[in-house]
Image 1 (spheres, rainbow, N blue to C red):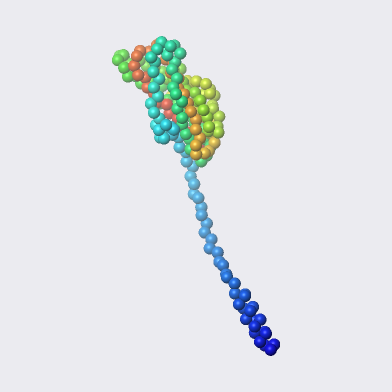
Image 2: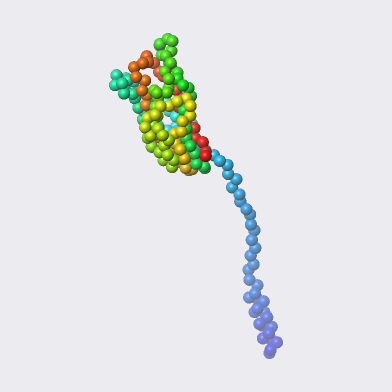
Length: 180
């Protein structure tokens, strides 16, 4: 009888000891990321904004200048950044009937002001008020923080006074966002 009990215990031990086994397989995943930055106009979703028209239709416009509606821009960057602003030329290009074409300088006549800032950065002096644009780069936003929806808005103001004849005066304003 002792042999039968020993065999029964051995059978019970063997059957309960055979538990499920597990093994692991490991695979590394590496995200290979590069620095990227994008600057776009909110209204168009692209690098080119809509034409901003500043109509001078009254004597008060000539005396006081004309301001635009707010123009919103968005920066998407995986690093902190700065935004600079400049014009593509020192003078406006002229289209009209006066000959020879008048030379209207940008400096002192076309101004820009940051009216809203959600970049996490600071508005560079003097652009919290209307400040003149130039053909050389000027800091507009300092120390913007990385993110996917860092926005700011600007308004333009033209103040040519009474020194220029009727016609259309055009210049491109260039914004440049650079990672720091």
